[in-house]
Amino acid sequence: MTERFRTVAERAAASFEVQGSEFIGHVAPVETVDAAEAFVGDIRDQYADATHNVPAYRVRASPFREYSSDDAEPSGSAGKPALNVLQQRDIENVAAVVTRYYGGTNLGVGGLARAYSRAVKEGVDAAGVVESVPHERFVITVDYDDSGSVRGLLESADVDFTADYEAEVTFDVRVPAAEGSELRDRVRSATSGRADIDQ
Image (tube, rainbow, N blue to C red; front, top):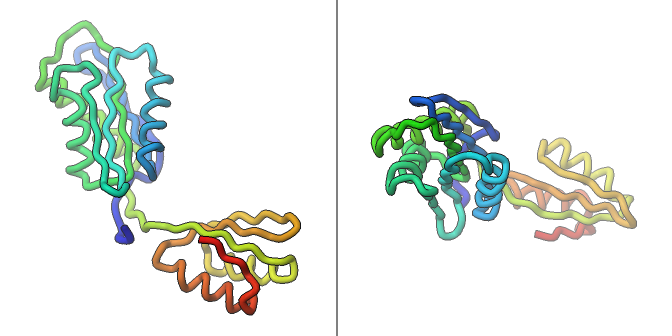
């Protein structure tokens, strides 16, 4: 999947009350199903005293994964409305969990659906929506003699990288997928082919 897509910019939360019940919409960017599940688990642990923690996520895995659960709320009143917001906003690689503290008044299926939708909408608004460009990672290993020119090249290309100076120097590089091939060619050229590039 190399095309651009929309996702949330950062982890965020928004809360409000409806007839005594408190709803908190937690939203986070995730890159894998495992990361989405970890975020759901994290919120469940953090809010273990809540009446419900309703998860929903959409992840650009292969195949594409969408998931939601009502977490013991009436069927169709919580998870699906939460997931619907992510679908309507056309955002991917995103996980949401709506925490509910029951306030003593039953809201009915319609009232719950509205509240769970609103919690995700407000969480997404708080996180901000951005267009994301798919990235790839690779590792460049060079001798010290070549490390200065490789580092300079990576800095001028304005890509994310970390450098580890051991017996040899390894650069862990994260680059927009569309630019990866050209960058690897430039590194090979700058080091006269001495760089070891592991994809």
